[in-house]
Length: 327
Ligand code: BEZ
Image 1 (tube, protein in one colour):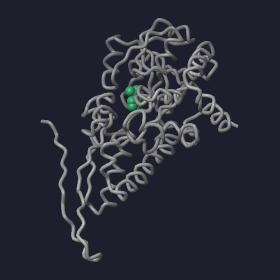
Image 2: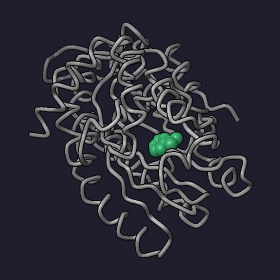
Image 3: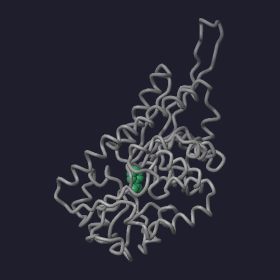
Image 4: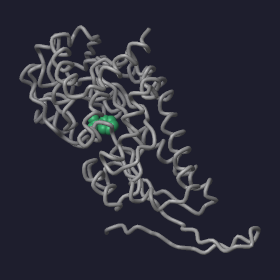
């Protein structure tokens, strides 16, 4: 059944002030594609609890995980029309509408997940967030961290040549397509929920993925090699529909801004801690793991860089912030 937005106008008498104010109790809806037990989804639930408390129980936020409201492209459309209030959405999806955001997927911007929060807090990354509303019609509240990207392959992988011609699942965005095409792979676009089956029935020879999902979905069971490469960041962005935002009181805006930001920023330390555990869990399975660094991709990273330097002049600023971080 179609879920209708519940908007109930209630009248509050603010006796202390001796005036009558009209406040709007609202049940906001927040969508994500990640499953219920994913760090992003748990962070969204904590934000919902905080916001309810901060509004003295007046507002609620219902969380719709696992793509219940559609894929990210569909959610973005709903956000633009105001049919959906909020979402935690991948920066990758946002890069389809805000091309410059693709620079967040420059290979090897960070050496480990520990550096992600600082890079996302840098001026170039924050500028991308500030410009989101003009480009997409959604207000970018804050970034959160996601696991760094790895490659799970159903075939053995020793060198990058082993990925040539292989159907590798990615999410459908230009920066990822450019990366995999540069290695001569055939990127195929599949939703998260289809990855395990696609690799099982060889519809895909592997996937670009993070350790949280590789371990959570036990993708290592069907992977002949998991390439631990940490080749890209995977930020999430907390967003509010601009149409909805414009109807909110200053107090509600401030609460959303502070509380959503706080919960999203907490994902940084969580990934720092958990990525180590997931890597250990993966290695403990005894399944082949190949740990590689930037040199594994040295034949392809310059191609990506050349294209994106032309496409987005902001890349050089982000690379400079990344260089500062690594020192
Ligand atoms: C993916 O589609 O690969 C993905 C999306 C969100 C979080 C983690 C992975």
